[in-house]
Length: 367
Image (cartoon, rainbow, N blue to C red):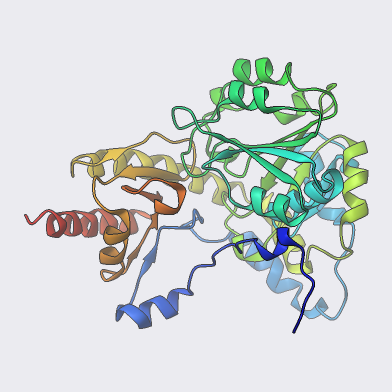
């Protein structure tokens, strides 16, 4: 074949998917593995969501509601925003795609941080935009450095707050000082995938900024706190003018029926939500103490995951843990060669992780 493929697509590195859990177990000869690598909710999905999904299975021959009407109604009521200020996607990833396609033409610039959520930069490259990347400072977004990168061609700024993979947040005063330097032609995107885990005193409220002179868009997901990552449903909060532009690039029926029904039921499951918050906070505290005893440096976090400097080759450690049926995320691809990222698990999973980590570190250091 002699395909005429543009350079931005030809040079694009696809997002690397992980192997299915069963395949990893077969490959490493283990059973009953625990996955603490993907920032999922270890408590599982909301029981109310599962019941609601079971109740709508007989309707799968119908197309889903293309407007997500009832889900939008539920989210709008919970957040105190208008339904036309919400845009739903097949995960918040898809809303990122909408933003890039709506605002970025070839040669336009988008500012992101490194390390950060990898999807921002791949979507910009696919659109033939220009990625302007600012390194993190003290493990957090360098908002002064980002402001200095803004040019007449800047269209979007993506800020994952909390940051993935570091778990850090910036405060209200720092953000407002930054926002004052951003021209009205730029859209600032606050990716709040982990906002539910942030201490109340440290949270920004995107609703305070979405109607300002400089547009601010918030991104949320049902994958983390609500435990339905497999259904892929997220949304953006923004002023109605921006929402109308995103709907122009949105495909019809982009959020499936099971996702809509399950997400709406999640909003009413306060018991599951509170159990998730308690499990996460207690798990972070316990794991921080126990892993620190092993001689590792555990970074503080405002998410359901945390970084650990294990002071050895993280890829080697990752492979050794796999043989023990424990899956974590090595951070070498992010430029952190001795770091791993760990998702908080259940009490039993956390104890098994610490035991496996202690055993593995001892074998590495010959103790």
